[in-house]
Image 1: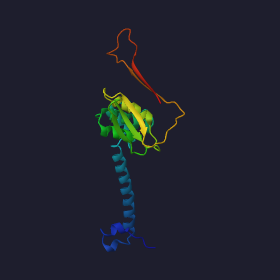
Image 2: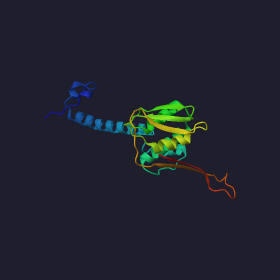
Image 3: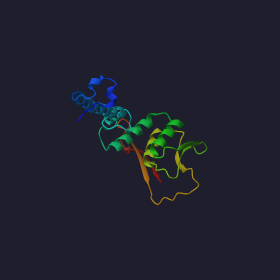
Image 4: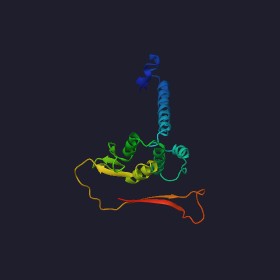
Length: 193
């Protein structure tokens, strides 16, 4: 039985080693090490992107001042994304990136309705949207002149929703703001969908 050196290494070695058993074993071991090294490089590269990070989420959470290591990877990523979008400027391109982040089909549209002072997010009818995450993130990043947002579809069909969804956003007084006789709750925002 002849043991052959893989073709990709034959260009770099003399022909006398093509059927050398020791060279073939050496290159098999090198292949395994290169594959392991490549997977480690890809894993490390993934930690720089929030949507792919696993063990690097601790760094992202520390960067944005979040509690470290609380929840599943997906919950932790959502919290980091909320803080990330809250720090970005309130521009149409950032809003478009936000709605495409919460959308599965990634082809949402954003338009500002000036007379009502709201932002309208337009999704396709077949799209699955994480409305709770959209609401929380939008309320953290919105500016004073914007009263809220509405969700629309770009289809002529109507959607009938049988369930009620309630989102609460509560803000409490900080220790420095708190005075005798005040309630701990600063304000509460509740939206029923």
